[in-house]
Amino acid sequence: MLLPAEKELRTVLARFAEARFRHELEPTDESGRVLEDVSYTLCVMTGARAVDQALATADALLERLRTDRRHGTRAGEGKRAGEILAA
Image (cartoon, rainbow, N blue to C red; front, top):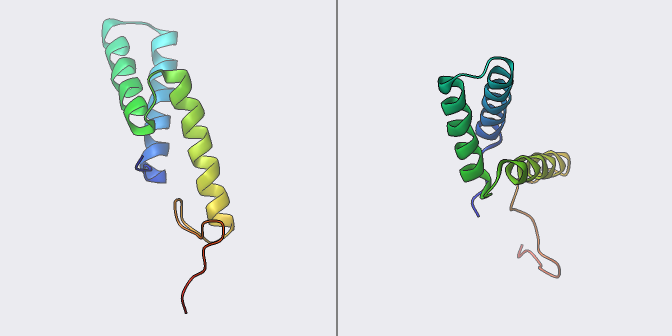
């Protein structure tokens, strides 16, 4: 799976939170469509089939990015167990 860029993932998560809040506060056909659209986008970005799963996956991806940044690597990079880099 291709990992989404952190900025884009955070942007979609923010759009989802806003859409969900607006729809719960004052549900309309339009707010429902916006929530459905951003939910679909979040699911596609994370490779999930349901919003709850997409949110959990997004959290895990952000944690992975945070950990990789702390260790000076980018997501998906680094040595595999037993791999030696040639000098």
